[in-house]
Image (cartoon, rainbow, N blue to C red):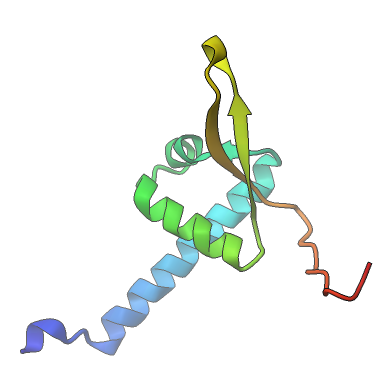
Length: 99
């Protein structure tokens, strides 16, 4: 029964560690100033791609980074790969009624 219980101290340490990793990811994207694919980010940061994608999705949902699909057509076949970038100065979200 105690195996399912996580002490608050350990849970807080894990949450803090995840916050640090997300902050490092955001700082890295802002520093490089260009778009990066998932494989490039994983290699540059030395992180697991699955966990990195979860952090990218979270930062994108918060509006701190943007995702675009990069498309190219080698050999006549269209290939699409997502890539991410972060503006150096965060842009405020536009409300529906504002131009």
